Length: 175
Image (spheres, rainbow, N blue to C red):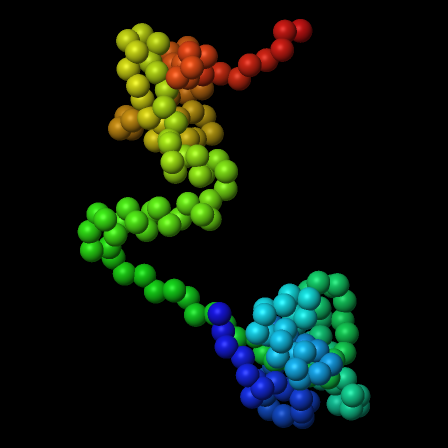
């Protein structure tokens, strides 16, 4: 996270840094301490774009379009939001590094992706009882194992079952 200090606070609307902040993302407040606190905590309630400087308003010269309330307002001071440095990546040195990096992703996954990450989806061939891992999911079907062709939904229903023995299809109510 970016570091902010009192040196980052812009109070003088006639300064070059104030003029250069027009159009940029800024934290805003009516006191320097509140402005600094908003920036240090990345408080979205005090974040917007500096629209213009109102040099005729000595108390609140910074005219900001706020994100949260989606309305313009005037403030006493601003801090230009610093760009977060992008993380740098290098190649893995071995399989263990790759595996540990993959495991660290789990805490950030949605429910379905978390399941796939931990288990995968296994199906059974109705003809001979072989197990197949679903390796790709497409709009018109799935890819099974190392097979490079798509098994379409109708073929999946006809030729495969889930591990509990139920058909690979969507159950519908009788009409």
